[in-house]
Every structure is written in C-alpha cells, then in structure tokens.
Amino acid sequence: MADLAAFERSYTDRARVAVAAAAAGGAWLGVDSGPRDGTAVAGWWRPATGGAGVVVLPNPWDERSAIAPMELQCWSVTERVVTRLAPALDGIHGVAHGPAWWHRVLAPWLLHVVSAIADRRLFIRTCAELGLPLLSADGAGAAADVAATMTDGVSGLRDRRRCASMLAGIAAELGLEVAAVTPREQDAPAGERQERPGGGRAAAVVRDPLLAFDHVREAAVARRAQRLLLREPAQVAIVGHSGLRDGDLLDLGRRVGGLRHVASVPCPSDIPVAAPTQRAALPQPGGADELERLVVALLPRLLPRSVLEGLAPVKAASASGYGPPMPVVACNYAADEVQNVFLAECEAAGHTVVHAQHGGFYLQAAVNAQERLELRPGSEFWSWGASGPGIVPTPSPRLERVRGTARGGSCITLIEGLHPPDTQVLRFASTPLGNQGYDGAERLAAFVEAAADTSRGHMRLKRFPPVLGAGPRPAALARLRSDGPRGARAATAWMRRSRLTVVSYPDTPFLESMVVGGPTIGLWNSAHWEWREELRGVVEGLERVGIVFGDPVQAAAHLDAVLPDLRGWWESPEVASARTTFVDHLARPGDWRAAWAAGLRGIAGTQLSAG
View 1 (tube, rainbow, N blue to C red):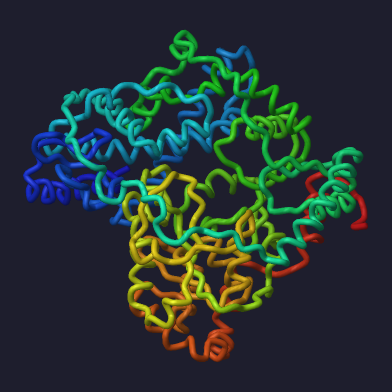
View 2 (view 1 turned 60 degrees about the vertical axis):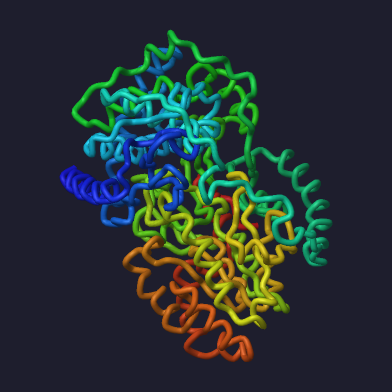
C-alpha cells in the first residue's frame, strides 16, 4: 500500500509539529484526563481541546484522500483473516462450514475490529516515530475481559478503558513498552463530562392524534397478521428491522403465498466463559502485512465468546427463532451472530440472500465500508435510489408511507445528529471520523446563535436517542425545547408538523424530510460528508437554491429571510425543481408493495399471481 505509506510519513510530519509546540513528554493511553505530571499527547478520538495535561494530535482523517485506500486495506485484511480463521474454527467445533459460512457470520464484526486496530495502530506508530514514551494509567492497559457477544465486542471498541487496553496490546505486539503512571485528578476533559440533570426544558411527550389512531389500528392488525402469517407455510423470509408494519406483512404474505418475518432474536445469555485451550488453537500471527499480523495476534482477546465457546447455543437460538433455511431478505446486516448464522445457513442450503437498503449515507457516500458487506459480487441489493450492477430499484415502504404528508405547524424543528458523537473510528467512510464528529453539533449551535430572536423563539430540538450514553450539548442547543412525538417514527412525525425542518447531516433524516415535503434546510460540513461523483451535481443544485448550506451563519440569514414568505421560497420553480431532482435520485417513488411482492416471489422461485 504505497499510498498509505506516504500518507503515514506525511502525517508523522504533521504530528511532529504539534508535539514540538506542546513540549509533550509522552503519549497518553489512559482513561482519565492525562498524567499527573507534565503534558502528554492523546489520540484524535478526544475533543481537540483535550483538557489539562493532554494535547490532542491532529486528526489524520482530515486528509480525506487517505480514506479510500485505508478502507480497501481494512476490507482486504478482513477477508484474509476470515480465510485464516475458518479452518481453525471448523476444527475447534468439529464442523466443515468453510470460509464462506464464517465470512457471513463474522465479517460485520471483524471489519469493525480491523478498522479500529488500523486507526489505533497509526497513533502508536506515530508516537513511536516521534520518540514519545507510551504512558498509561494504572491498570488501564490490562487486557479486558473477552466480550460475550458481537454487540458487546463492538461496544467495547467504543469504551475508553477498552480502547486503552487495545492501544497497549498493539504497542506490546509492536515490541513497545507502556509505562504505568498516575493520572491527573480532575474532571474529565471538555466534551466528555456528563450533562447535568435538568439541562434544557423537560422533554414532555406530545401525543399526535394521527399517531395515536395508527397505534390502535396497527395493534388490531398486528394480532390478526401474526395469526395468519403463522398459519401459512412460508415461501420466503424477511429478517431485521424492515420498517414493514404488520398489515404490510400480511398483505405481502398473501401475495407471495407465505411469508416469515423475524425482526430480531436475542443472543443467548448462557454463553460459556473463555476457554484458553480453544483460544490457543486460533491462527498464529504471520505474513508480510503488519495490520493483518496485529489483528490475528489480538484475536484471542477480541473474538467474542458467542462464536467460539458459545457457538452451540447461538446456533440453537438461531434455528429456534428464525426457523429452517429458506430464501431471505436481510434488512440490516450487522454484528448479530444469531441472525448471521441463519443467513449463513440459508446460503449453505443454496438459497438466495438479498440485502435491502435500510437507510444511511451508504450508496450515497464516496466511500463506505458497509457497502462491501451488502453489495456482494453476484448478489442482489434492493435500493431506494442507487443504480448499478446487482442493484434492483425498489421503493421504500417507510418513505412511501410518509411521502407528501407535511401538514405544517408553528415550530422550526432542528434534527440533531448522533449525540454524543461516535468518535472511535470503527470503519472508514466519507463521513466524520474521530473528533470530526463534534463539528455537527457545533455547527448547529452556531446556526441557532446567528438566527434572529424571532426565528430562534420558534426552534425546538429533536434530540438523538442516547444510544452511546449521555454527554454535554453546546449551550445554544441545550436551551432549546425538545418536547415532541416519541417512538420509532418520531422524526418524521416532527417533520410533518413543523413549519420548517433543519437537518444537521445528510443521512436518512434529510432524505425523509425532503420526501415528507415540508420546507427543509440541510446544514453540514461538506469536507466531512463527501458524495459520490454522480450525485455531486444534484447536491450542488440544492446549494444553489438555499436548501443546503455549509456555513451556519449564512444558513441562519437565509432562514430569517425566507420565513416571512416560506411557501413562496419553497414552492418557487427553481427550489421545487432542485428538490424533485434530489428526491427522484435518492428516494424513487412507486408502488412498493408490488415491487416487494415481485422481488419476494422472484427469490422464492414461485410462480404465484400478484393476488
């Protein structure tokens, strides 16, 4: 990887300047603010203002041209490691599954691990090149317990203590020493303190009458649907959180001639403890690629117990929850060993496994590792908007349900991004990486502060569900009201009842708001969210008419200017044309029931009529 070697040399030069200016005495791997004495450098996962005793190294992923080769390297290593793991795991379990079976089960989890190690390796290598001693708080570098499940394993990659353990493990494999030192006694660094209770107004639940009616109606349909779905022999399965309602499933089942739908099956709780003898039978490090050697060396402490010591109960849960193998549509392929075992068994039995788009910036971003997992050679992918080999244009049930449903209201809704941001790099994509994740909230806060008082008084914040714990918001956002609909479809409910919606990132919520049809402004850093070449002209069209902004002050000025005649701006020919072009590219309209039914019949091999 000549390009990556040049990138690493260039990054070391950047880091050397930052370290010299800070007079840092070491590289900090600890979980606290910094060493008790002196100043140390820390990784780009922390806020740029790292706190007392810590200087954060420059974010290497500001060099966006390095993301594509890094993503390719991580994928190549993932595939090679699975190939090396498969015979060892087959031998341990006394089976003959082979590399393809194990790839289907392990790849979503392993790609996270390889990407995290690649990112952390760059930090350790850079610090070693700069001659910085590696420092860790007492016990922070100790090997963490082996994760029980893939989900636990991925969560551990985001945990600060486990991150310190991984850094220490990488250093040890590279032959570097880590010195234990006492941490500084003080608060956590800026950006990592817990939000104080009572910050902002209390989040009251506002019941939307339409949602309440839907809930009652769907409950009755759900009971009937489940009875009928279970009565019919299944021709094909849909697994994962598809966005399909029970009534939808009932209708599709009738059209297809029998449908099984399972959203998720929990991993068993009785996973055995780690067995040293089994872990000793895993592959030994070797080969020319340093990243691959590191991954293999760290696998004994990282491979979840669910796929080594606990594979038998996982297989039993998968067979019980998902049923026998059959043709299947997978709606959110991820680090879920129970579902992945079912998919692997379906493929091993010769059945088709189709992936369906379930949201997100993939198939829009210039680079996204998730696409490697789902757009497999020779496979079929159902997409709302993208086109290409193996991609089948398929309207989205969820988007079609909300298309053109804007009702308007008095509030200006701000859609918050992931909070607190996921700053631990777990895969490489044309999205914010590391501490770039803090930019979204800061940009949205600057927008609020720059808006006129009359505009600000109508603003409310749709907070992101706290999937990564609590964290402080910029004051301008913390002060905003956050009362509104709750539940799985809350974001679109807010959008439908808003005067205008501001979305802080070009992911699913921005597309949903454009499909709902109410006035919308997108606000994000285009340096962190990079579109595919064929979509750049479409997005530039939104920028020209004032729908998309990068500068929060300009966005606020535009908001203040159009609010007196919001409909006049939103329905003007140039704005309507740009909006229609965007939506037609990324959320194609159509009869989703007919498209899904035809697709399901196709992979099931049935010749049933549409009904």
